[in-house]
Image 1: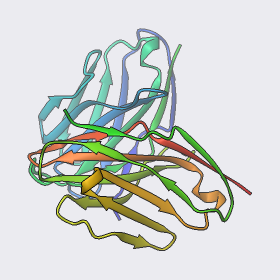
Image 2: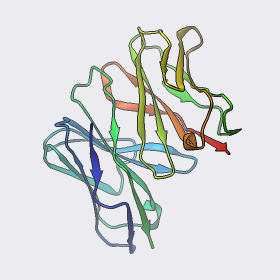
Image 3: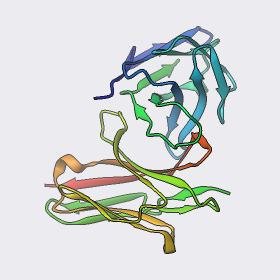
Image 4: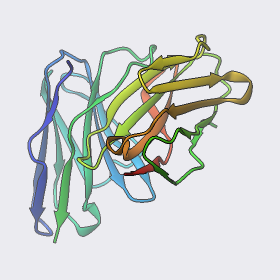
Length: 115
Length: 115
């Protein structure tokens, strides 16, 4: 079975803190994704990575950065957390290739509260 | 423009009832992929099914079945003899050929199965 894990299920941070959310997958997937999920807005793509050290912006990259130093690990960084970044963050991974519409497998999510 | 519409925001049924969740998609592409995911209260999106645009055969998996009709651009999901454990938010998603990174999610349908 595909396994995607996220470092924390729940996080509480203060405004202005630097926040790291980590995601690890064990299926040797090339692609990894970070989404945020908010009531009424659904799932929105923040960033994705199709290879080590490669990244592309999604729909809402502002206020976020990412790091992919190893194939299995994809980190989301909030450089200076703000209250409007309180959300559910979901990581996903899939096999590589733009052409094939591969299934994305999701982690359990991290509920982040920024005070 | 590509779009996925799940018109039913919330559905409530009594256990053992059958329930159908609607999904209507929009795309001009001829090759695309459709997905259903389940998100239980724990938060993780669980993959249920992937279907490509050339395969209109209906799928059945236990109490779950999917009806794909290109003529109406619909990919509906039916749960037969619903159970309390089916209570979750269900998402339909569209992925386009050559744009494998981009998933277009519907807003989700919250299903509540009462005992």
